[in-house]
Length: 464
Ligand code: AMP
Ligand code: ZN
Picture 1 (spheres, rainbow, N blue to C red):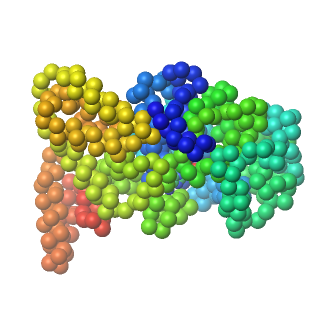
Picture 2: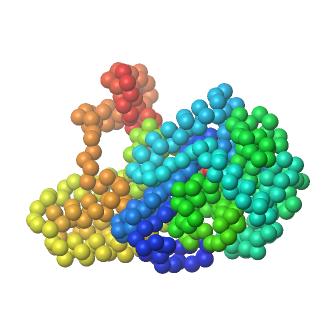
Picture 3: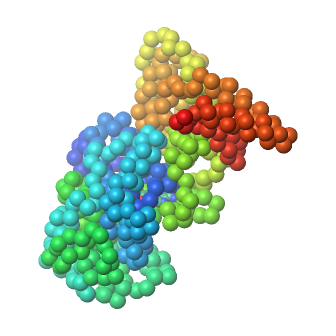
């Protein structure tokens, strides 16, 4: 398989440390608020990579953390702890917030058919691991205590910027913007490994450490959890492109200083989902989630389909009109597949030919758009019998996870409801609001709530 490696800035042959086995770490969500559809694009990207590796026959161990402590509002250790801020706002404890948003995260994760990694671990459950690593870093003189906090000394490394193509100036300016300098640091790029003394007196979660009661920095979490479960080497590590600096740069710094050697060979980053105003981000408020799309009447897998139709290394602009097109195309595709009759016996040559094509698209830096186009090509090919087509699609769906063979479970009265929606639309156009309103009320009594969106009206089922 060929994959783009952020570390070398090249498309490379993927060769794991141990033949046939892959250790793969994905940076998990910070569970202080809902994960938006941009975050989910990132997890869909890694889900496809995970499933591709399995399709190719690798035994994959996938690890993901849940960040429930230490991630400040600015990724470079400035601002407030996101979890504490959210707990204050919602008048709940930090652990309640973590539990609530972790559960919600996995509901949306599942709605887009992502497979849960073998190992999922919250940051708060590995405090001893972080303390051990930090102790070693201090012993090796890579870390120092200053004004109560423990910092990583980036000046001790000759290759601190290896992941960012040595764009030092750009990086430093980028994260200096609009933030106060932390005068306890020796160098601007030094980062916190352990907080004890600071403005975070109100921190609810605190642990004893050799440097005083406090809590870990964000970056040490991922190194700690990864080293704990994967041992001293990992094949693939990744997240969204915003993680490249400072998060992954700092993860490499501390892990390699701790180990005294190279740690991870392939860094795989997903590009962002954008909205018209820029990157979709949690701090914007009013964010769009997969659950919300479902409530608006969309099939969450239409969103997965939309993501898979663009390359993971390209920015993807979200709009309802593109989602509508994806939903229509996805429905049409499923409909075409549902019309295939399971006839004939397996045409082994055709199966091998198409399967190899499918693999070659995925091996080409995970080209999911071409893999989907192949499904359309297959459908059009009249020389291949229905049974072989269905077998191929069943296999392709192990990676695409678009439920291509699953029958839609529609309400029996779906067509009648859609008819009433049309009647209501027409009534509204005629300004006959009494009729429009009575249709809405009657449907609600039957457990059908109408949802008006810019693109038209859909419905969702609600308890009566
Ligand atoms: P967070 O929960 O904020 O730590 O983010 C979880 C993951 O989502 C990180 O790996 C980010 O890189 C990624 N991410 C954040 N915003 C976006 C976006 N707009 N599009 C794609 N991925 C994103
Ligand atoms: Zn991470």
